[in-house]
Image (cartoon, rainbow, N blue to C red; front, side, top):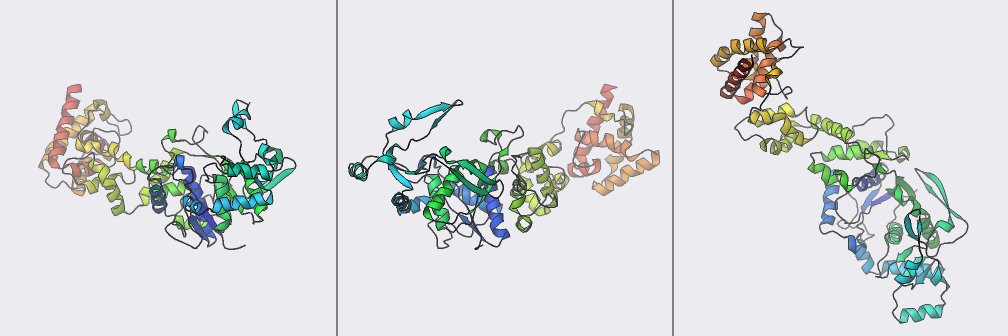
Length: 485
């Protein structure tokens, strides 16, 4: 086979949907696994859906995910332009549509909107329109007269109505459809712009695309694509159709889910590397069932023949776990740089934010989780004195009160409030009284945090709070227990 060339051809209609990101990722991996080329083509011929700024989103997303294209609007590889509206301006699509007309594989259609509306039928509660080839029977004289009169027209593909068409997909195998099911799809619209389906085929051929990666919603259109390739006498590319992505309720992943786009996920505190890793596994499984991959490792391991036909479920719980694994493995300086804004949104006091960051690094799954882990540093929350009772630690209100009362003067006299020094003080009390460490640490930690779960132990928390605040909270704990007894 010739050099592998794949493309990502998004329409600039807004944020990048997770399904589109997966298409881009798989196209990138297929090309790079074989040492081939990954192209970016902007398909902006649908002017009604064009969103200002969406092209910039495409570039930024590819940059953030590391899916660097070899050719594109900003990297001419000799087969440009790489923006469809610029290609349209050259008249290339109309030129190729007229070639199909000359071959009898396409025809002018002058039907009015009213006539087309009369062809609509309701089937299974859904309104469909199958064109009846009415204009295929027009004579050359009638066509010429209509064109000279300036009548609006479209150009339609001339598909057969008998027999079958078979095409091969690398994931779904050979698929055969009855030609009676193939409508004569529009190739050139009345505004002169090509339809998505037609421009795709022309551009893929002229750009030398060898593997076409897209969602399986395009399976039903593939026979018509194949017939276009055959009509032109062009080689049909390798088709790789990706399975559907659903939410946890097995509904198609939509904007209503709140996490349907790459930007949604970044805003929710996910790392781009973790998102790319997770998205790769939505429909593909490596040979050894491994789950954590860098992009470079994915390039090496990716085999599209191991893609699934079954819908892939977007599991937020699994993505959060994976994101947490990436955070744990992250260099501390990089982590602190990303975590600091979240910490500062909660902590206004003059505390050691780096120590607080170190406490939460292995405990969070996404960055917004930080707030719930650390807010007690800023202000001691209201808590129930019942928290001082812990069956496993064998503590209750009376034993906790004794520990706090015994240790308060010791801690008042203590000057060194570093973690190690404080731990040594509490350990001496444990040894002198013949009790377990948890028996002492539990009431201390409860008093200084007001929490059952904390990102660090009692002495680490006291080190960050400092002597004055720690003693204040210990005294408040003694009063809370005393008032309740």
